[in-house]
Length: 167
Image (cartoon, rainbow, N blue to C red; front, side):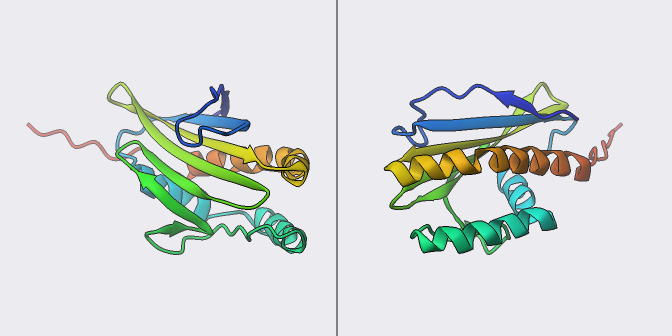
């Protein structure tokens, strides 16, 4: 499975003032994936190296007043350190506002025909000041690597559901 970078049009309805965005998707031979379950699987099973990077980010970011980010499932209203802001049958919107930047993560599960679905992870950021711009500049290569890794791991962990034929 290959991860494909998607074009993001700004302004985006989930964060209209966003001035930075990226989006990646993967096509799966599935038809039964639910966005909330996908969001939990994507963000709740981080590899050790990602958890280490987040610990470093949280330690350094805390010195500058950034809220901590965690990648673990913590309940219905939060996935990791990210509050669930909205959900529907195809999307889950996560994120929060901080003094340096506001961000949103959109986990989308969209059908392609009757046998395939696309899982897309879109990140939207509104940078408020120089520190927000610097922060995004520094973390962007890590962010892209993490998102691609999450999508590849998710694709590898999902199996084709058994199809029952009724006669």
